[in-house]
Amino acid sequence: MQISTRRSGNATILDIEGDIDLYNSPELRRVLLGALREKGTGRVIVNLKGVRYIDSSGVASLVEGLKVSRAVGNRLSLIGLSPAAREVLELSRLIRVFEVYENEEQALGA
Amino acid sequence: MTGDQDHIFRLKFEVPSDPQLLSVVRSAVGQIAAVSGLSEQDCRSITLAVDEALANIIRHAYQDRGGQIEISCQRFVSGAAGGPANRLEFLLTDWGRSVDTSELQGRPLGEPEPGGLGLHLIRAVMDEVHYEPCGDHNRLRLVKYLTGKKTAATPEGD
View 1 (cartoon, each protein chain N blue to C red):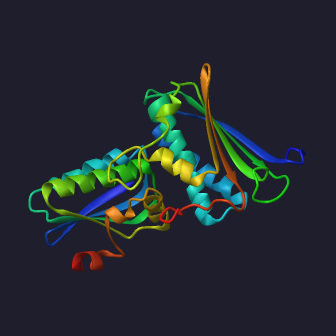
View 2: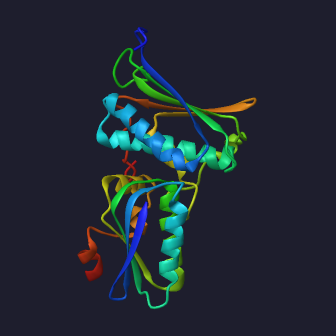
View 3: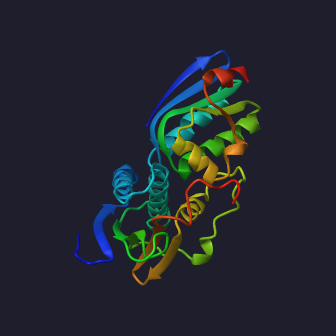
């Protein structure tokens, strides 16, 4: 798994490539929570377009990010969900707790 | 092929209790599901279920301290399609800590809380889930019927 970070206005966008599993979800958690807590960040957008697989530990990292975003008063959005990522979030019945958009343009416009 | 009418194949391998090797097992499980004729979605969901089961063994049975995990996969065909005789079965054996079966309930779904999802995902995907502590080892048997009964990713309305 690789995570690239970039800015668009006051949003931080995390582009993730590869599988998210028990081995590397701690890295996702670390980068995501760091971005959410960074001063001047109004929202964090997690781009999952390059993620072919995500397990429950990856979902747990996203959920933890959601809780932190609420605590610090900014937004967390997910974009580019692959069928695999969407299925796991649906099976977990958590897809509705996240702001989910098809792509970056839609997320930034929302 | 074994020549046994009801038993198409059996694959058995052993992996260390190491999260870094989960991706290797996922590749194998996905291929096994594919050659068993499952849809792409079912291949993904079975891969998820086996991966979650292995992650639970690594975290809870071996408590991240290492150990061995034996994975046996068997494909059976017998009788009517959609029944338990026509199935793909994974038997995972570990020699770690036994889990109290009362701990295997998971937590309510839909709540935005991290953790506790793995078992729910396994149960949502597989048609049978059996956990059995057996003295010095533990066995987890996951069964997927090959047609009918249950399809993956049908959570919202069930």
